[in-house]
Length: 196
Image 1 (cartoon, helix red, strand yellow):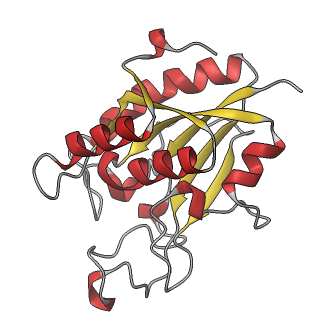
Image 2 (cartoon, helix red, strand yellow):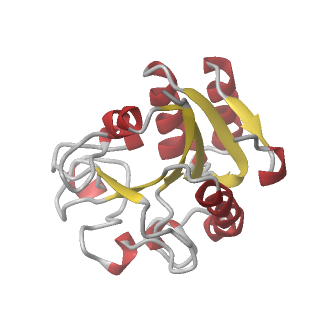
């Protein structure tokens, strides 16, 4: 069985980009590099997954119910939609996380597809052994997805040009990258550096 790579695009949604409810500074700047990775993976016939926050209106994730964050990425809202300029192919698999009121859903591996199948199982069904991860935000959902991928036995490459951090505490994003590297992730700086 052929072992292969998959692209995982984390939470490139309106609410995490400028003008959104929980905007990441320059969050929209991940779109152009991600589109280049999408093109490379699609041309190679490799699977592409896009994770999304998909929260109910009331969740422990939001400040009003004990969490850290203002309401964002509420199911069915414009803020929860993927950025319009992200060129997701029709074959991309959408994985939704944070759907239950008691679920934080930071990791793409907490998410499921439309039939309830988890990301790890979807990757295994496609014979994926290596994941390449980009999106938002470096210090939260990207970090957690990378670490959970490593824990599940996948080889993980962080797409450094295609991530941006929240930096709730200044330096969080830099520390997150160091944590991912320490855990065994590789980092590449541009689509020109990727081998598939």
